[in-house]
Image (cartoon, one colour):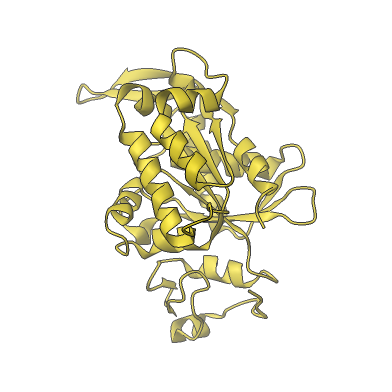
Length: 295
């Protein structure tokens, strides 16, 4: 998708003359009326010489997506090996700043609001040292919204648009939930793969879109996970079999942001998990793998 648009002035935005490049909806005021993509994100996408390769990051509520996404942006901004990220506008720095400041204060950021018009968006241009890079274009989606779209397709245009447009997908899975809470985490990931197949699959062929499945919060596990694939086969065997049957390119990863966590008792007597040490692990690796497969 090629455009000659480099900047959309306010009068053009207010006039609704530019269709949203993500969902095709109308840009009115400061956002798309369909997918709620802010005008800054739309301008950023239209400012690229070609339509960017989009990587989506999705997971259920409480999986740690906000922390993962913020830490990813921070690591890419500083550079990790051949990978360097550049924020496409000030709006892309807001989430990174929120997450890093929270971690510095030994706190995790607040829960993502359910309302789509309150989500923070990022657009990060990633260079890989090769001819073709890719872009991370995604809102910090509330897990409840993803679950709602999976249960009733068409209820959340933002989620549907992101999956429809993605050239690669990162699926986050709560490791503690997999071990201690039964099949809820596994079933969520399976629903997401099934949804992806409904949009991009063919009856006799596997889905070509590469999918990285990332077990998060491994720092909270009693024993280290040295082999993510073996862990998936042992603790999420149905998910592993589905991926093997329906995805041409998939790989399991483990990640964590906090090197260790502690627990505090809040005013109401509940427990509050706090990060004692920031020690990211396995955050960039899924994107290093995806970079060789995104077309």
